[in-house]
Image 1 (cartoon, rainbow, N blue to C red):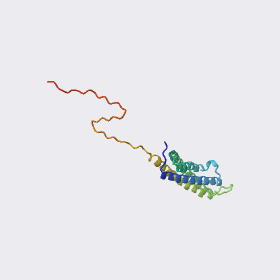
Image 2: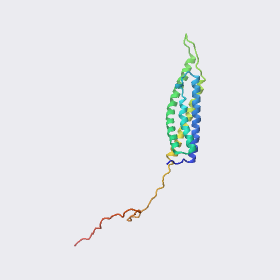
Image 3: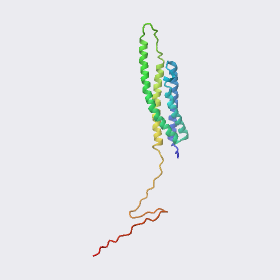
Image 4: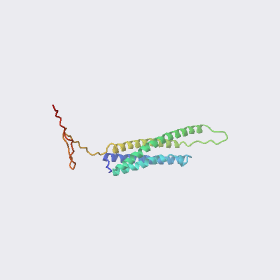
Length: 193
């Protein structure tokens, strides 16, 4: 029994899903560029951070076009998971980038005798900062998407109308097809003198 989503919620899911796909693709592309410019291996690159947003984004587009409640539930759940995972990933990425930036300053200012001096390619810093900016934007969109999912699924459930029957005191209501209730015999309260 899958109810259709409201049109406004479906359009909002579609827009937020498209934004998630765009931000996920940008983060993935920037991560591969960062991997190519550094000596980090592919396992240390944050390219996975974009993929975490692409999957719920696809579900947002699906729920926007089909107005399917089940797709919106999956969209909401995956966005909640994405917000949690990416918030932790964001904190780790900020720590790693700040460590790399501090290391780059040390390497650029000192050399050891007998070894060759080299400079760190500082063109990776803007790419890393761009990843952080798009990661923040994607986390905010995922948070908004999970809120939208909760509003459209949890707060707009169609409930059946309730019928209230007001009964006068002392009256016995009988539904059709039911047996007449059996009453106990009446008591005689006469007092003998």
